[in-house]
Image (cartoon, rainbow, N blue to C red):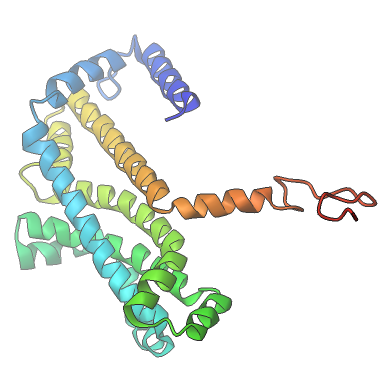
Length: 273
């Protein structure tokens, strides 16, 4: 986190505290009261009962979505006929809002972990799947021809050619799905659950414990930010070669990062001995 990001967050909290200091509204309590309830609720008291179950649902649902989305996306991306055959049903499923399937999930799975993870997977798998399909289908033809020329096939082609070329798009789809996983976790816990952050928020709202409700909302924002930050760090580490290629491109002659030699003047490589 950069100093600018920290400064922005601190400034926003200070402004929020100043504006809400004299608030007498039941719906918008002072920030100091919200922070007091945050410390009382989330400083270890409800971590095991609410935070841990929510994080497990998000992580398990996200990982299952990534596994299914990448596997199916690789198959569809490498086969034009499969894309044509499975395209319409996948588009239909993609456009069904996952919250609309909450009644179906309750009927099939009941009130439990399976229902919540099912909703998370259903909503998160499609961004990863579509990003994988696009990444595999749009691999540079030169890269494909080079792999054919060197007779690279099978698992070696998948691991050394296809996945590295499609990895940036897959990572973009996974980041989108991670945000959706947090949203769907909250939705599933608000509708039918006995624990979790979403359950806590809706129960606090129903009992008019508004400061507690805001403390849960604040925690959800922090959880989402932490998950996104962790994913960004992992992405930068795993896709280090993409940053190296971008730096090399910026440093190449004629690119914005490094101006080309002036007309009429020979560079070091052009001087005649």
